[in-house]
Length: 119
Image 1: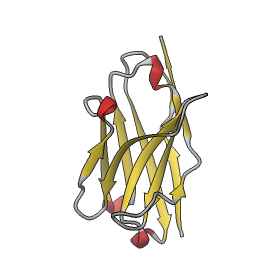
Image 2: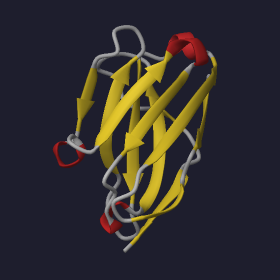
Image 3: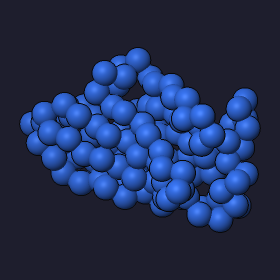
Image 4: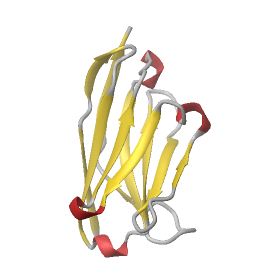
């Protein structure tokens, strides 16, 4: 199985930036791609961005496309989420997840990291 550990969360002022990391270990060869999600209190789980390990192909949720950037470092088995121009409404628990195939579901999840954006 793939184990995922997120880091990089914290408190930042509105307009600031954070970079989240997601380190994968274990059977990483079984992972086709990775995604970042977030969940704010009282809101649904929200997909933010995804990337494939092999080609680095990316996809984004429209509302964050201009501010967030997903990237990966295959040598480190790590995926990043660079978040710029943060807003108070970006406050949430951010999680990374792995999916085994192109059309598969995200099935392995990290524990999440809290991001708080103060106004």
